Amino acid sequence: MMDKSEKIFVAGYRGLVGSALIRRLEAEGFTNLPKRDRSQLDLADEAGVQNFFVQDKPAIVIFAAAKVGGIKANNDFPVEFLLDNLRVQNTVIRAAHESGVRKLLFLGSSCIYPKHAPQPIPETALLTGPLEPTNEAYAIAKIAGIKLCQAYAREYRANFISAMPTNLYGPNDNFDLETSHVLAALLRKAHEAKMRKAREIVVWGSGKPRREFLHVDDVAGACLFLLEKYDSPEIVNVGCGADISIRELAELICDVVGFDGELAWDATKPDGTPRKLLDVTKLNNLGWRPTIPLRDGIVRTYDWFLKNVAR
Ligand code: GDP
Image 1 (cartoon, rainbow, N blue to C red):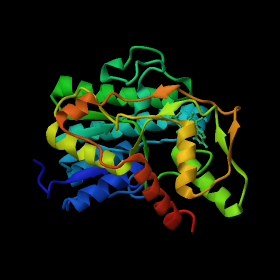
Image 2 (image 1 turned 135 degrees about the vertical axis):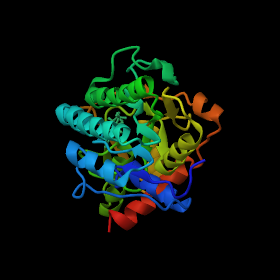
Image 3 (image 1 turned 180 degrees about the vertical axis):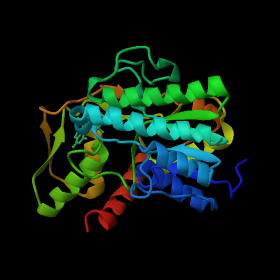
C-alpha cells in the first residue's frame, strides 16, 4: 500500500495525464506531491534534474512528461519528437534510479506497436513488425523508454514499470488544430462551426481508421492501481477495450456539441494506422476497469473546453 505521505513526483504535472494524476492523487489524500514546471526545472537538464532528485528525494516517480502531438505534428517534426522525448526520459529515469526511488511508472503509448499488429493488440506484439510511419519517431522514443526501464529492472532490480495507454482525452488536452489529437480537434471544430452557424466541419483523412479512446481520469486511476498492485517490468496496456471509427467519433462529437451540419473529408491528410485497439485482458485480470463511457467523457470534456478554452 502507498502511504498518503509518500513523496510522489509526477514528471509533466501540467500535461493532460500529469494534471489528471495530480487531481486524482490529491482527491485520494496524497499530500506530498512536489510540482515543478518548466521554468523551475527543465527535465532535459541533467544537472538540474539530478540536483532535484538528490535534494527532494521522491519515493515514487510517475513519468508523464512527453512531447506529444496529433498525427500532423508527429509527421512534421520527427526530429523534435525523437530528441526531446529521449533526452527528458533518459535524464529523469537515470536520476530517479541514482537517487534510489522506490518505484517508477513510465507512461508509453499504444503507437509503440507495429502498424499491422493483430487487433486487439496484445502486449506481446511489441517489436514484431514495422511501425506506423506518421508517428515512428515518437514510438521509437517510447520503446527506448520501456527498454531503459526494463534494463534498470534487469541490471539493478529496480521496480520500474511501464504502462501503455491508448488514445487519451480530457481536461487540459491540447485544442490547437494543427498539433492536437483528433478528439480535441473535432470538439473545437464542431463548437466553432456551431457558433459561426457554419454548414460543415472539415475532418481529416477518410474517416475509416478506428481508434480507442480513454478519458484521462480513468488513465490516472489505472496508474495508481498499477503503482499499488503491479511490480513487473513487463508492459501493461491501458484501454477500455472498445474502438470506434473516426466517422463515428465525428458524429458523436457533433451530437454532443449540438452541431447539425455536414462532415467534409480532407483526403490530403493522412489516415495513419488503420486500427489501434489494445488488448486489455492483462489489466482486466489484474482487476482494473474503466469507469467513464465515451459519450459521458466527451460531455465532460466539452464542458471543460467551454469553461477553459472557448471563453
Ligand atoms: P493518431 O492516433 O496517432 O493517428 O493521432 P490523431 O488523434 O491525430 O489522429 C487519429 C485519426 O483521426 C487520424 O486518422 C486522423 O487523420 C483523423 N483525424 C480526423 N480529423 C482530424 C483532426 O482534425 N485532427 C487530427 N489530429 N486528426 C484528425
